[in-house]
Length: 354
Ligand code: GLA
Image (tube, rainbow, N blue to C red):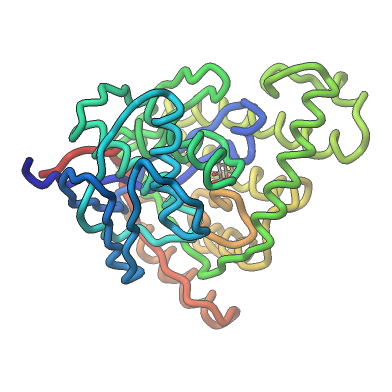
């Protein structure tokens, strides 16, 4: 069989942070930064990463945990096998321009690249939503990262020029156009903090415990009266989640009416809430948000899990470059890291390009 080239996007989350594991609302977009997999069917898996200069090598019938990036690929085979789906191997190269560890969904992008390849090469007939769910399960159960569906859904279901309003409980979604005169800037702080993982697990544990205490699955219908029954820490984190769910709906509606300036204000409000109450920000992210707004952006906030990674900035297309450059030059005077920004386009989900 001929070589297939799969292009799998990263994601930026516009609003709805730390709500997916509480089965609330999110609103991400797939972005035009990609992982590219060029491969052909084979009995074994042999994938060379051009970024790492390493090769992932194993047989689909022998999945041994190795603590490295090949686990994202093995995880896919693990979940397929669990579901009784048999797929052969793949031989080829993984490359692309999506930075790893920048909070832009690179793990999900890799998972979807591999799964989409297998789906095509071995006619597995999986739908895009099934692929998102399989990839999430691979990460939860094989890699051991307790993420929600946000990243995998974005990489699989993205649509050019649109954000995705998603109910993560029912997996009901709606595409919302990004106004054509609005730029989305992704600002990577250059910070990859390990503490983020531990804090993520901890926040998730408290939020899930709170939901259990209230006897509900989803955070979507919680009121402040109900939350008042919870112990302080559970109340604090779940109250954030409830406010954030409400902001996702507000942003969806404001974006539909084209009021990007008002969207920007909600983003800043969300960042403040994440920093003060949910406590997943850091000085670098706070700095980026403050400076972006000072330089004339509509708004900005941390995107992804927090504690480093990236911020998302909304600005008019005419100002985007000067806002991004302005933040960058001030940032490097303040912090010793190597930041990078991307003015991105909302993009299609994973696809075959050749
Ligand atoms: C990470 C996880 C997502 C989501 C975000 C926070 O990106 O992979 O599932 O929980 O953090 O919104």
